[in-house]
Length: 429
Image (tube, rainbow, N blue to C red; front, side, top):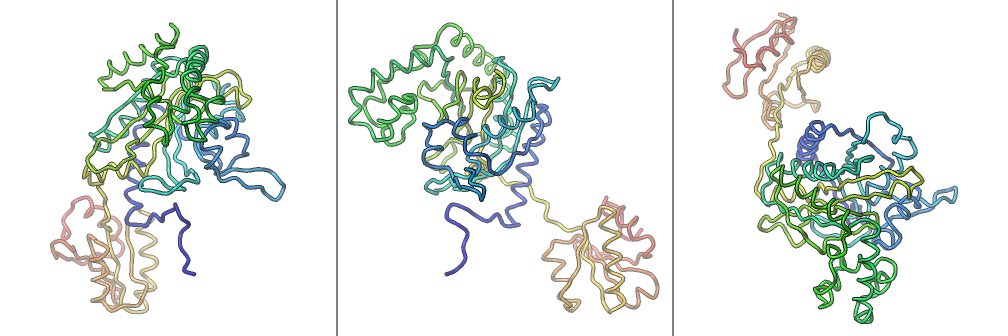
């Protein structure tokens, strides 16, 4: 049997890794401007973290988690999403005691979900996410949404749509829950098995069902917006006013509920409207989750965050024909001719690299002509040639691959002269 990557996973090869690095660096720049700090959590957690943090009624917990027992009989789960892990770390490390509040965090992490692989949806996925813990100010909600939109805009994306909703506080949700049960109960036998189970446990999730989305009862289901109490309505209005103040366009979608149990108040999704992007248009989603920290044994702490799929971000860049600027040029390629020159080339490479110059050489004993071709394939700006004659004179030849200009440089001056030339200096000076 041929060895292949497991279904739902892909290799990110060197020619594509540069794109990932560029995208991640731009996002990190945005996070720095918004004063968010990076956090890194374990690849796996105790299963209970996700059962309690994500919710037993969610598809993630019921169907999609990679769960296993270790040799000590402990149930562990590969991380399916980022928020529960970050909140667990927040509680365990007593970050709620930090003098600087709220705690503003971001992460880049691999997630694992057992679902049917399709374009932009893999079993091992890469995600960028942020979490803000310790603020129940609606301006924080707007800031988190603004950060997500800024990440996309900084990469040149324009065909974006932001949709928002309010899930209300506990009182509002409870009243809405009762109304949903009353509404769907007469149609219970017509719904899929999952929705029949959800109707009693978490009826809000019925609205998020992909199988029953076209059922007539979905279109007439009571909206959470009709059951917001005064406090929840005021909170939602403030979030919307802040978005308007920042010039961020949005649409209110009364059926937006998100797929995780811990959300309340603000929920949002960012979608791509680019032609040819695909059927699944969501790029990022998140919302407020007051109560999650307490669920994971921490003190009462409000929170809000989002997750952004990096595979889908790259797909959106392709859909809008945005070229990621990649600098694959090599500063220098060193050609050594002869045994003594080969020996000396090792020292030269070491010195140049330690002085910030990007340089490589041939390691396959090829002829000089083949080495020049290798320099061209590696997009080297300059070629350094060291042979027996140059070594006796303690000189080295440098040639510009663009202009063909060349000159001899004393070996003792090589590093300084190269630094000058790479900054735009004349090769013959």
